[in-house]
Length: 466
Image: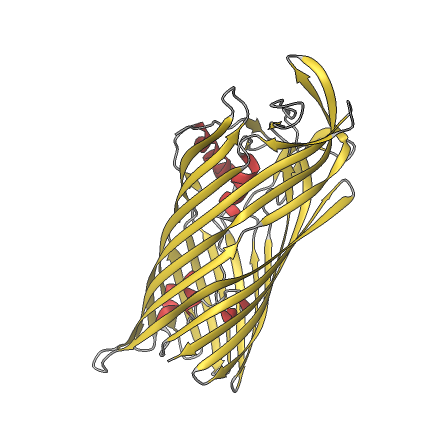
């Protein structure tokens, strides 16, 4: 197993990992530590806010005690149509890119077992939830001819190139399989525990285009240690409780352990005479998370729920060498506790269901200062909020109809975030052009673009209660 050390760039208040840099930092938060998992259409319409209500097997994602609430068994499947748009701007110019995906994103069910009336335990239930979501992401940043670099070969200046554009490209998906057991004690207290099995597959690309002043050709250069691929598996566990304070008010609480990830990584390297493809393995513990919930159910027709989740730890890699040490230093010095608040409500009109939800997740990083190029090509130390990953807002809405044993639910969910994307800091190589294996970027300065991401998701759930 070959380990590569990071090149470190010191900032005003932090370390900034550079060699396997931005993609690794972003994926650590956005993929391996992300709480935004999909569920049934009902769950998604309520922005995932069901921690003190329970009743839907997707609540395993929030509080496994919710599995103890159902009094009938059910199964369902959810089809999703997912649209994503990135608008990336730099120096007064913006580029849009859209992605579309249709997939079966959620299946699961709950088996309800009624117990003998001689015990205060009314039900013991078993729930299963499988969710899958695409993590495909593409942002293309416009060029800026004011940003230029000299290319040297054996100490001799052979060309000057100007920055012509950048592409950040990620393919893959992440899934979560959860199995939980829940109990109903005297219709007043619900308890539950779950086991979660995670998988993630990532293909990551990071490349930039440059125009040559020598012959006006445009060549594309790959960032050092990219492209790379990761195939990962993880495990976590959760426990929770829901209590009825009175017939109208409920409180819930749950804790999910860190997800312990095993990451198998394959990457390209251009630095040594033995340029080629290498492999390495990593171990990552994502943040431990706690959630507290409250629900108000004034009557059988209306319910509202509030969840607040907080990360209790920070991402931490098992140390094999300098790379993991520097990653851990970065997250220790610059990351904040992941926090999210979600509100969801449902109103019933006979067999009809009207639902809505709202969620807000804070930025996972503190403000950071980096040396970056301005629009005129000059580099200066600049402080940024929402660098690498930004805040996320979720808005949900949905309807449903019960046909006695069968039901159909539909939901719409809008997710939006905005962040600053730094790139070009470090080394890149062109292995096809006439400057093969020549490094063209080797400075302490980055280009920083603004990325606005908007996702529009549509869900249809078909279910059967029995």
